[in-house]
Image (cartoon, rainbow, N blue to C red; front, side, top):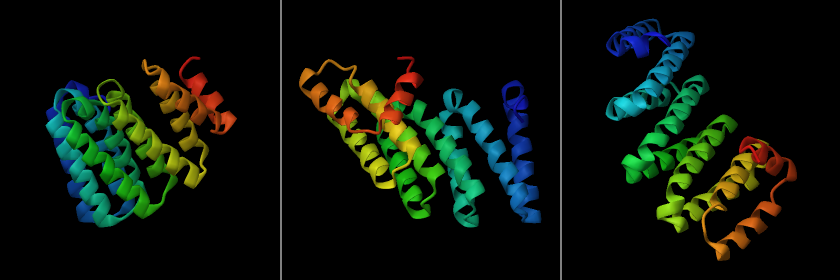
Length: 201
């Protein structure tokens, strides 16, 4: 599937449909997990050149994950949603926000660290796009990430929050910058250090 999706997208889609048919017929978790991972790979390739097909596939992944309610199916969906956000945030900000809200609702319902991490990354992707044209909305998203990171007290969430804070600091807003610097200073030092390393600082 990894090679086929770029060389022959239609054949890749046909293969994915066949995998789904077999998984549905045999009803084995391992087969559904393989289908979800293959769907994730294909959705990544579709994201930029056929966003509508990517969104349709994402919705199928969500429907099956919801029906079967297995962690191995939710994680590929959340990862695919995070990647789709990169394209969706500029093309359709309202749809991007709705997708982000859906990711948060699922993460809250299932309470799994991997789902919260993907939500935080998607929120950062969206806030990064908003910081130039709607700084207040970007700050609101940053506050949401920080609140979840503090509540769950997970290093990966604090690191995403630190990255988002540092990136937001790059905008020309001296008044807002002081508050962001103060917020950065109250994050765990190791999370801030990892964030600077990630950004090459």
